Structure formats: structure tokens, C-alpha cells
Length: 119
Image 1 (cartoon, one colour):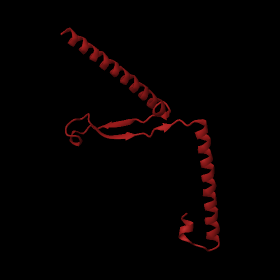
Image 2: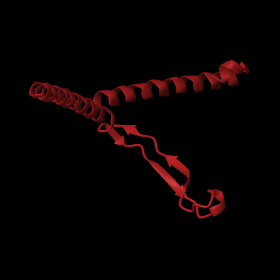
Image 3: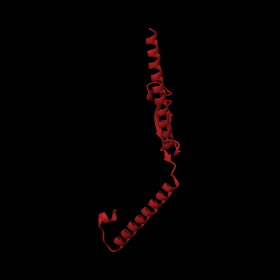
Image 4: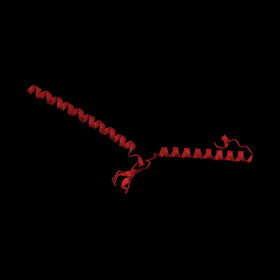
């Protein structure tokens, strides 16, 4: 009986150690996820619920949310990402100006290719 109790204690200790190791690993993973996904957000996502005062809209419960609105999370950009984003914007603005210039040139010369003008 003493040997059985000792074996049981050893098994319990092993399970506790394993559980503690899993908890530490899960804590490390959750911390990393929070750092990457939550702490980097400039604006966090949230949901706003409206409350109806009409009982017939929500089956008699006047405090039930009947509609909601969510905002969009916005990630805080690093310096490199900001420079890259500005470059993309400048390139796209150049493309748009080029398209408008071609559209004006085509419309003045009497050319009316729909696919060209709708570009």
C-alpha cells in the first residue's frame, strides 16, 4: 500500500510538472500573440450595441441588443511600412494622373474606346 501511494504521488507530481510546463508555454504563446495582434493596433476593434425601447422588436426584452456597429481595427505602421505605403500612394497617384491625361487626350481627339476611357 505504501508503494502504491508513493507511485501515485510520483504520477501526480509528473502530471503537475507537465501541466505547469504547458501553462508556461501557453502563456508565452498568448503573450506573443498579444504583442503582434493587440499591442500593435493604433485603434482596437470594438462593437457598439444599440438598445431598443420597443418590446415588440425583440420578443419582450427591452434591453436586448437589436443592432450593432463594429469599427475597423487600425494597425500602427512601422517607419519602414509608412515609407512603403507613401511610395505606393505616390505610384498610384501617378497612374491615376496618367490615366486621366490619356482619357482627356482621347476625348479631345475624338477617340471613344470605352475600355480605354473606363480604365
